[in-house]
Length: 242
Length: 295
Ligand SMILES: Nc1ncnc2c1ncn2[C@@H]1O[C@H](COP(=O)(O)OP(=O)(O)OP(=O)(O)O)[C@@H](O)[C@H]1O
Ligand SMILES: [Mg+2]
Image 1 (cartoon, protein in one colour):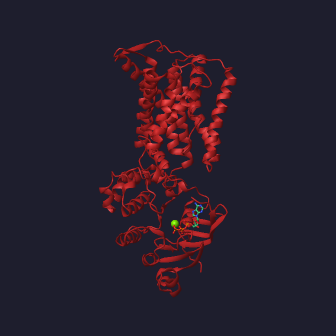
Image 2: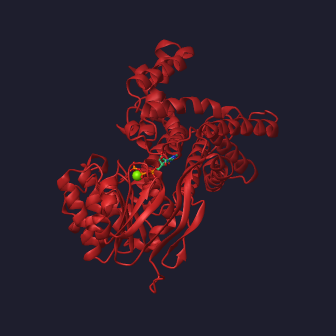
Image 3: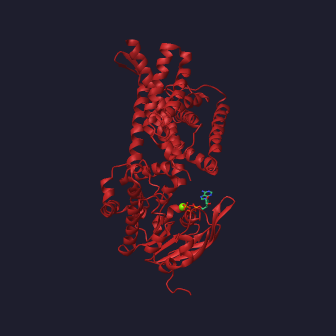
């Protein structure tokens, strides 16, 4: 079962938590170049913790995280953008009192991405015209959908190879949800980005993804081809409310 | 009429001094979320540093800036790294630590100087300027101009430089800042260093105006707290404007009511503003709701 092509990201038996509580148990999964991987699970399953552990905001208590053939388990969070790993956090976490433009500028803070910053920012505003319209507006005043686009654009400023998104569809109108998933799909198919997204919106996430994993109370209980997971009776009943 | 102009002049000049002390305090609070009780002691260190340069290197007090500023920056950065950073998960303890530092610095200087009062004079100290009939000491005018210049320079740095943006980003959401590639620990050290340096800068400018004593820091820190609350926690322009409000309030209360009452009036206004407008006059509205995110 070993894959001849090494994974872009591999999470190997990672355990993590806060204080006395362990939230993530022995989590293991892989992401290959060019794919969209969805990790789905209910509220409190540990999705945010999993992404936070990968980027180093939460320390792994056991296990190993490899990115582009390099052990990043203990690598400080602030070095990851220059390695090519970007995270769009839950709710976007924009800098509320800065303008849209300044938020994008900060996306290119790491030294490697500062060159060509202005060109990249223009590119992002072309990709998301609404951000161009709102560029002088404080990010705290954006609507939910605009905020999500701004957060995605900000993460793209460092030209990542792997983009991770924490519940990009949460709190958006059905129309907006569709739009955000379209954008994510476009980034993978047209821009060649590799994507990991964490979602509660199981049905839609598995439709967009190539492969999926199911996270349940901190355990990755299933994994495989997204279409297959979507057709699975058990999964439909337990996670998709069908 | 002449009285009024005089009171206003006194208030504005005093305000400039308070502004200078408060800008650094507010920068530290805005970014690191620490109330730095030791800020007044850093002013005191700046004054003694100026005294040392003046006495031993025979420099004009204003020239000692080239030595005092880098020294105070380093003092601030070291204090942050060695005392405050290890306490980062316990914000209340950090505040007590700055209080401990206040007592420590004050008493070390007291012991070192044997409690003797020192003074520093500059060649410009004797010069005074006639402004609309009011005689104003040039040293006070320099302090006012410097406070203005520093506030503008700091504002420009924070707004337009990448490092300044990173400092603001950390103030607004530190984990998002980390995700952008900002080394938050380094920004804390830098910010505390800058805040300390600004206090030292104030100390330098005040050395020719006040006589030096180890307890002088306390007489700046109390009005500085009022300034910061009035101007808005974390706001650099707020600290500047707040400085003048406090200076003028003190001058007016001292002249028209009773000098003994000036602090009572000042802190009465302080409490009233806290109740009516917790974000201060210039604080970012809504900052409380966004909660200036922690973790
Ligand atoms: N900073 C924290 N300190 C302590 N416990 C935490 C912290 N963050 C999360 N937890 C706990 O860890 C568990 C998993 O939380 P996590 O945020 O990873 O879940 P999630 O799957 O992202 O949930 P949601 O869908 O609501 O975003 C929860 O029980 C939560 O209470
Ligand atoms: Mg979450």
